[in-house]
Length: 254
Image 1: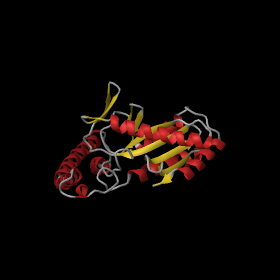
Image 2: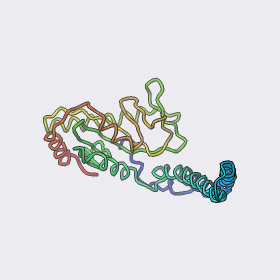
Image 3: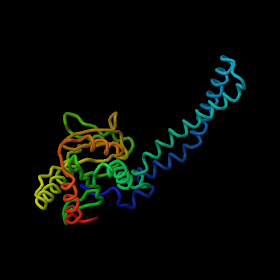
């Protein structure tokens, strides 16, 4: 992965000096506030349900009120849980490559695509996933930024918060070119590789998709859809199998 892997568990990430540690600490400390606010919301839901039941002369109005209160409390709990779970890769509690790899296989294998995980050119660049199929070839890396990091494009340039993303983009584009050159040389099939980053945490634009500086960044669940929608290449089943076989042989498994 260009710039190193986010999955190497460095000590500071699991100590009191890291943003991840503070995030989890503040989350736990805020539990009482979330529960109190949830109870208030549920009470409002109860009152609304009771008023509606009386307004429409429904039988057993208390049951409708309790039901609406339960729905409100459940929705509130799920919203906060989903927000916390979305940071799991950034916090080091889940592995992004495992999530993306599973997503790719479920959605693409039956469509004639081959997914190879953890591949590298010996002594050079490495990537998390190599996807080969009827629509072309892709490399996909997994990345995760802090929840408040805005990922955006301004004037065609990529930004992660206030930092330029050119180094990240160039690194993955160069990796794609190196992989394409190797596959073309070994198979005789002209190969162009599209680089992607599956973003597991960070503030993405509406729709969860961004393209800048030759790189596509997207939420992991969108990757199969983007790949299936591509028509940049028309590879036959024989070509797909040949490329996958050569990639498995020539590219070092990490």
